[in-house]
Structure formats: C-alpha cells, structure tokens
Amino acid sequence: MPLSDLDSQLMARALRLAERGLYTTTPNPRVGCVIALGGEPIAEGWHQRAGEAHAEVNALAKAGERARGATAYVTLEPCNHTGRTGPCSQALIDAGISRVVFGMEDPNPKVSGEGLERLRAAGVEVDGPLLEEDARALNPGFIKRMERGLPWVRCKLAMSLDGRTAMASGESKWVTGRRAREDVQRLRARSCAIISGIDTVLMDQAALTVRADELKLDNAAAIAERQPLRVVLDSRGRMTPDAPLLQHPGPVLLVHCGETANTGWPAQVETLALAGRDGRIDLTALLRELARREYNEVLVESGATLAGAFLGQGLLDEMIVYMAPKLLGSNARPLFQLPLDSMAAQLPLKIHDIRAVGHDWRITASPDPEG
Image 1: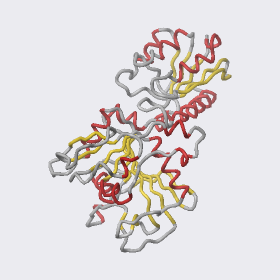
Image 2: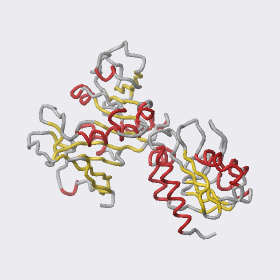
Image 3: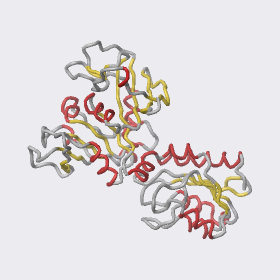
Image 4: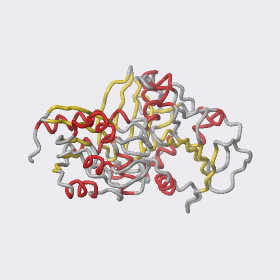
C-alpha cells in the first residue's frame, strides 16, 4: 500500500512517544508505537525502561481485541528475538495486526530485517521505512554501537564570545548561566557515560552527576535514579580515594596507563589500564570498551586538552557549545587544544542548530568531512 500523509502523521506521533524514553531506555533504543484502525488511533505506547515491555507490547495491551485488523506504526523494526522480553514481531502477529508501518530497520544484527520478514511470512502487510531520518535521530548511540562498535560521542563545551573557556589559572565558574547549566544536566541524564580528565576533576571539583532538582523535568527524581558512569582519565595516577568526585553517588571508571598510585578505592570505583603506544590513554580502545558494555551515548566534559584530543583523533560525533555574552580576554584558555599551523589544516564543521538558552546561546555542530 502506498504510504500516505495520514501514515506520516501517525508515524510522527509514534516518534514523539519514543522521545519520552529519552532518559530511561538505555541500553535499549527509544521506540514508540501507535495502533490505528480505520485511520483513527486507538492505542499507543513507548518503551519506558530496559527490561520492561517494549513499545508494541504496551500499545497492544491498551488496544486489546481492537488490535485485530489494525495497523501498527512503529519507529523501529519490531524485534524478532527473545531477550529480557519476547519478540515483538510475534506479539503483533498474535494480536491480529494486519499492517505494520516502520520508521527504520533495526541495526541490531539479531534483528536486522528478520522481524519484518517474520511479519511478511505471517501475512502481515509491511510498509516503510517512513520518516527514517527522524527515526535515526532518536537513537544515534544505539545505531552507531550496532553498526560500528562505538558509542555516539558528544562533547559539551562552554565558552565566552571570544572563544575562551577558563582563565589562565583554570578558574571557570561560571562562564555560562543557570539555564545553560540546567540544559547540561539533561545532556548528562540522556548519556550512558561521562568522560572527563583528571585536571577538570581536581581543578573544578566536579561531581559529574545528574541532579534531579536541576533537570526541570516532570519525572526528574526517577530519571536521576540512574546515574551515568563517570569515566575519569588519569594517566599519571593523581586521583586519590578521598577525591570530592567520589563523595557523590554513582559508578566510577578510573582509566590509567598502568598501576594506579593509590589503593583502597571505594566500592563504586573500577580501575582500568588502557595505555596507547604513545604512553597516553588509548581513547579509541576506551570507546570500544564502553560500547562492549552497551553504552550508547557518551558525553565528554573536559578541558581543552582532552577535548582537543577527541576532536583531533576524529572521535567526536557532535559538539554542544554554550556561548556566553562575555569576554574572558586573550590570556584565557581556548576551547580546544588543537595546534594547527595553516588554513589548509582547518577542521570544517556543520552547524545543525543555534538557539538561545537563557542569556546564552547553544550551538550544536559536528565535524564536516566534506566541508
């Protein structure tokens, strides 16, 4: 059946439902589902938390017997394997759904087209992909982890109008205002892990936690129950068991280049040696390890040196830059430690979004290899 404007409208509704799982579904993808009969929605659902029912099952439970002969709009191909829950493709078949419209195929090798084939084999009409670009934008980390074995890496930076992030002494509180800092809390909440360097941890005494009172979301308390893994890069073993960061709840991964200088770490701390050939921490190996642990989205919150290393090695997918209407002067520290000697060496970016956040501006950009 040709896809119609009504199909697009109902898929758009399913995409909005999927967004409700933005902070809670990891390591699973965010998925929404709308069930319609005669072009009218009769039930809807979304995946709310890993280990709980998927979007299709939640929608089918609300539809009941009315699902027979109906159309299901699902943002991601229904799964075809049994994990912590059963296969959604079979649940749709058992409920008597006659047509499925999907947003995108599932990049998970355990699914990848097999869910759609199972539906077709059972006589269910299958159409799609529909609004695929929007469907992919919902789950950049899950998709990249499945396709490339790496998480989506997003770097958060705060700068003055003249591109400075801190004074020469390292003092940086606060470059941006309250609204921007609340926005960063929501970036942390959607992330599986936060990576920072030891200099930032010691200088700023950063907790790197999600704080419910700063999220400004209706279900803030429930969202803050899941604290992202805090990854501290400490190549020379400067972290101590009494560091302020360790006085806050949540797991910590302390990455170093060999034996750490200290012992007696709190139970929340895991140590990991990942030395590269240059004697520094191997950032690519770190990202592959995080993907192996099923971490979809990673947020880098660091100073110019580590941020520059991620950018220079081609490991950043996205940059969120908060620009404050201030001048910090030429002695202050730059956004990236990225020594470039000629215009030919410049790194072009693609700007995706610019918007006001309180008195500051938030710029979303990504490296542009074709720029």
